[in-house]
Image (cartoon, rainbow, N blue to C red):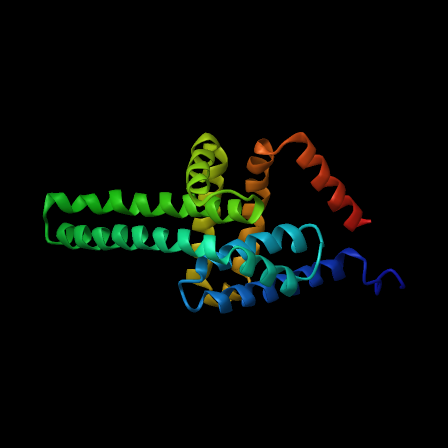
Length: 217
């Protein structure tokens, strides 16, 4: 009986993680409202998932706001550039779609622009996670994120599946918007960390593993 009501058993830990995911998703959505802050929000979301949800280090709110403020300038600059490019691709896709519906052969090019939008989404998945994990110049981050996505194509395709699945879940059950951001990022984290660790030094990997073990104990 004591084991059933033990707050450290698997059931209660699962409930706590669920509540944490909802709370983190809420904070993320709240900070995304101005739109121009989405980049900083994505960076803070990944940082908090990696540190607090996955490794139980620190508190959700505190870690999120720390990462949001620390990476705000760099994340926002890159996000605004990515947003402009994405809007351009979307605008071109809409124009070509209208041409296709009008029976013009060139209109089939809308598929090309939709593919570009997906590629940009994958690229951004790497970019803001990269900012959350490493310090570098904006130029280097943009370049390294693209190279990582290309050189680790199988894992990038896994991330694409996650993004498409999350989109379908949100389309069918919009209420899950209060859960999907944190859960999706956690799933992506499991894949992206396998990529990032390949580019870390042995010393950095060992230091991080030791820190995570200390908090677990």
